[in-house]
Length: 318
Ligand SMILES: Cc1cc2nc3c(=O)[nH]c(=O)nc-3n(C[C@H](O)[C@H](O)[C@H](O)COP(=O)(O)OP(=O)(O)OC[C@H]3O[C@@H](n4cnc5c(N)ncnc54)[C@H](O)[C@@H]3O)c2cc1C
Image (tube, rainbow, N blue to C red; front, side, top):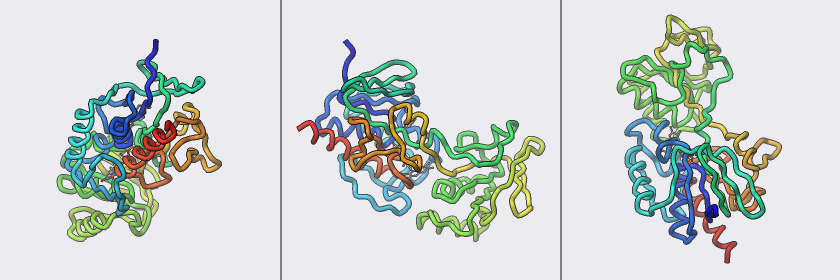
């Protein structure tokens, strides 16, 4: 007989971990978290720079935590350690290196199909984030430059001349940190930053004023070319510069095909449909975290979604 879980959580980031912890504490019994990476929190691991400051009220958005996860300001490392301790203490059931490909509902039970196995559950939370699919520029990235044009810092090494592209907190934080060990230019197509939190904006302007990094504002990139194995960036103002590496930090997008495969519907603006309890049109199928916000997700928001969903499920069982 196949075991039937009360809840299967897809994605082991803050939303997924929050859902697992709340389920255990609030009394949902048989739960399983499925994560495609070899460990939890792949967005934090892959996209946060080492020692990055992690803000609870990210981008100045003040959030009161509603649930049982006591997440606080810290660093990348302290945040990962804290999530480690939550997973260990609560002895949550989780599988790693297993990517969910599809979910379908047979009667009252969901069948969850992964690259390695199949599971059955009464409820499902999809908390897969958006960074599995980082945004890419509209112009072509030459094939020969693939290893020098990146969307996270994995390949970055000290001393390289870098171009960071983007106007959000991720781009700013990458630029600030990397400028301590590299020659860094930050390019943003608008004249002014509008989405930076106060600390990041102050630091960026200070670093620029002190020439620790260079800002190239109000100009876009037209194309990239390979120049002797390096990246020649052609700007729309007619100038060009050659860099060792270009890193885009321009956010991520909802993995629409995957969600459609899971039976999730979309409105005319291509936004996933869900109600005030984060429940989709399929009863028992919920969205949490970055894929359940229109813009500007955060760890605290993901944790609050998770808490709300579990409370909602338990209230419908009474
Ligand atoms: C550079 C950067 C800096 C940031 N700094 C902050 C900050 O200081 N403070 C803050 O609050 N927020 C910050 N954020 C935002 C924060 O990281 C996100 O809002 C948060 O991680 C969202 O959590 P989530 O659980 O929705 O998704 P994610 O954290 O993206 O987790 C999703 C998980 O699902 C897994 N997954 C994806 N697809 C599948 C699948 N098909 N099957 C199984 N598993 C799957 C992924 O591997 C991943 O581990 C930052 C984001 C970035 C990119």
